[in-house]
Length: 349
Image (cartoon, rainbow, N blue to C red; front, side, top):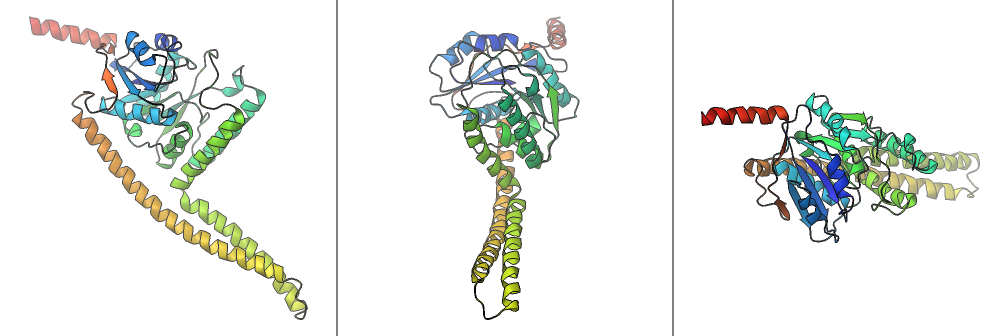
């Protein structure tokens, strides 16, 4: 399944669909899913005219992250073994999709991310290239992975990986899913890809500062959800060291001259820092308990996803709100079509 989240993409969707591969080595069938995130320009109708296989339409805009996850859920219930996500603005080359799928077919990866090699993108400013490198470095540390281009939305997921990813923010799925995948121990691979010329400005954020303002909390929350003890314990340790150091300053001067009380502010600040350190330590314990509950809930959701996929009876879309199939036949590999033709001929004989 190739899913394409859309927001008012009626003009760019035809070029995107035209570039998609009709056959991929090792893949029997290819189907397209367009997620229309409350478009007002007839994107859903344009998708149907282009012959996409499924259209999932929201009556109101819900955001890119919600669209991505709704598409993943629909793909799982439609029976997808591999899910490829690409943008509707034709930023990514459809010819690179076989490169994304190959590591999954070979069993080397469960999540494959297309590395746009941002340093070579002409329309990226120097500041944006620098921030891309810095941001990906931060995500690598938070996720304990070697992801080269974490903001890239051009990615492929195995069925196993897709069932385990949950996005908790409305802004973007790219950063949070990388941190989740890394912390859940999924095998991740990078694949160098190239991009098409820019067709329009980003609709996800207005400027680089706006992206940083919104992406920063996403990364912090995602890391805190999966590594709460490390986060709070580090803060607690810093406060404890600060409190002990400032308190030692007071003790030193008090022992030198017990009659002089000019350093009591050191005592107050030191005690306050130690108290805050204890509070942070308690917060770390509570956060770990909450994280344990979250892991249990995600395991339940994983089982629910699997049950829903099984109940879909081989890809029937019933029960998925806003989803309808156009009836277009899947794109099939030549060898699969040939085998089906031979089987039909034998049945007729």
